[in-house]
Length: 338
Image (tube, rainbow, N blue to C red; front, side):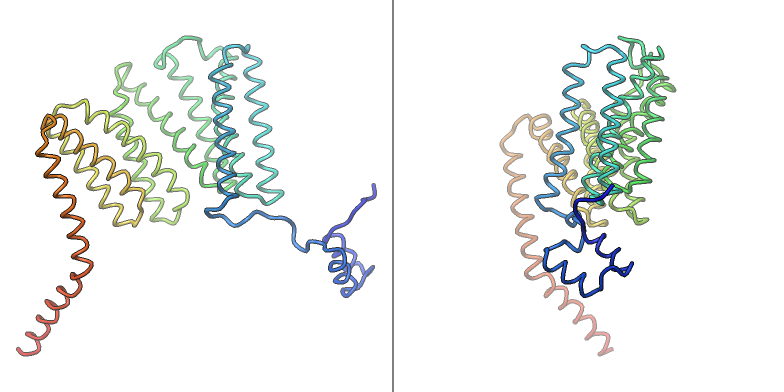
């Protein structure tokens, strides 16, 4: 079948075959304004295209989530399976085509992210059709089905991360690992397992694992692992802190986030400092309204302390180097004289 148009690849092929000369190729390109490079994706970074990519990708995932929440019960089991399979195939196929064939790596990666997020739903519909997912059963009664779903979803997400190298999918990998670990803890501990305590420990492990990934050159993937761990640690650890009446637990909460602030300085990552500041503010908030019962003196002291810290930082920037240099110079002079 003949083509009705031609592009730069056709011209280059004809030039290699000897049908046209190199000069004729240049003349045709200039005369017809033919693109010498195929359309490609803009460089990654904070720009309008990137914002549109991520907004569209997460909007697609949100719309699918809302569809499930609003209309899922209206479908039969086979219809649910068809919806999950078609959604995964369409988004995954488009993502593969964009990322690997059209070289739009971020656009394709985001659609593959959406497809990977749909994977647990597809596994759920298959296990439901097979009779392993009883309607109305508790999380504990479904622990083995949940474990299967978590293992398959985790394996699928790891495979997608490995073959696409798209960092955002590491977020789903961490979420699926969280689901699997929580289910394993429930299987070992029993019905009365402690979700908040377990999740806080798992989140801390994710943060440490993310730090290890950062140190071994996987910074882009580690970012999402650490972010997931920090979010869940803040959520569950803060709940435990507000529910606890122990002063020692409150001090533990404060110490943990002071350590996280120190990690931020060590790794030079603002993300850790943001979560540390939020948590320290929550600790102070609890002191004001719980321990000090809304006393106006404590907030006043805090305000004065905060202003003093700011002024101290300004003073250090302005005079710190000069003061330390004088001390060092004085020591050097004494050594020289001796």
